[in-house]
Length: 110
Image (tube, rainbow, N blue to C red; front, side):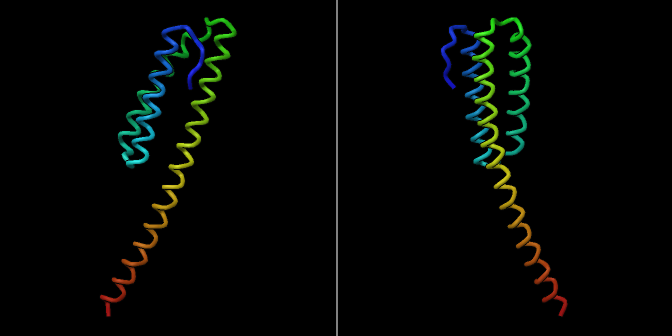
């Protein structure tokens, strides 16, 4: 997500977003859902603070901000897709465990 944008605040914001993306990915891969929620909350605050000042930017800079936001949305879509896949796998595993428990209960009741 590297854009030619000389504003140091924008560059700092980009670095923060990349750090959030890295942390989000790490939490997803490690299935650390509480940590993920905390990171998403912090990222939301960062985004709100940054976008509060975007209206005063010149149009060419707004376009760069829009591109950065679009890139972030695309990255989030990949994260969501992976989480949905993991959710489906977990549901399937839970179903197998439930059937096993029921079989054990039925066996023990005889």
